[in-house]
Image (cartoon, rainbow, N blue to C red; front, side, top):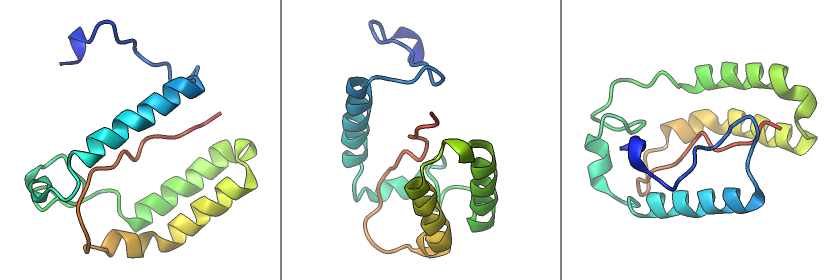
Length: 116
């Protein structure tokens, strides 16, 4: 599927993107997520995190906490204080988020981010 997407261009994660490219990526991701909002069929897909059809998750609260600590060690000098504060609050509440099973299901992209 990915081999014939011309005239699309592969992004460069090290170089980064323009504001316009980032805006387009977020808009398109939102369209993808909206198309599956409240879709009960997501539970049967083995590639969807926390789906019933998937094996037990490796990304549990303990693992995510360790990953956060490693991320801070590696990129701490580049992080603005309010980013670190937001990350700390997320980690503190991650168990509650992880255990929450109420509400509508939907897709998310957990790999959107900025490292520079």
